[in-house]
Image (tube, rainbow, N blue to C red; front, top):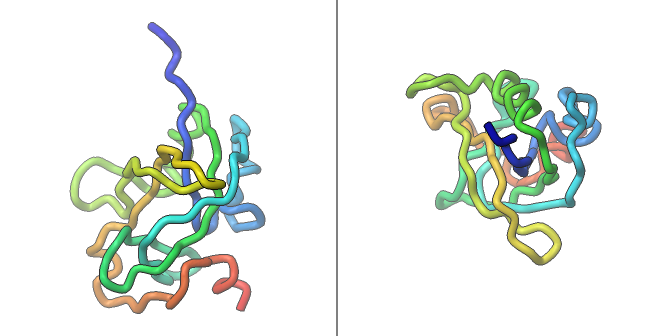
Amino acid sequence: MPEAPPRHVFVYGTLRRGGRNDINRLRPAPEYVGMGEVRGVLFHLDWYPGLALGGEEAVTVVGEVYRIAPELEAVLDEIEQVVPGADSEYFKREIDIGVGGRSVACLVYEINPQHVRDRQPIGHGDWIVFHKA
């Protein structure tokens, strides 16, 4: 069976460099590609954020893009508590992210809308700035 090719992931919260779950501390090691951005809304859930893609209140959400091996994708799925069905905390999406003037197909862990129903957005798109304030 052929080996699965590496994929890209957009991380916008605790998985960012210096965050509580810094992706650079995970194995197999990811390869940094660059800073990226997407339109969406960030919500403060507790010690971590949730991203809802698009929407009327959308702002530019910044994050880091990494090339990852399939083994690391499985680790990220566990961290983000991705499970089959409608009760998953996050849903894994693949969308195009702007990185350095080009478009890169990336996995994005989008929060389940049921988990942010009564939450207020943080008002901008940078979790690191919000969390350090």
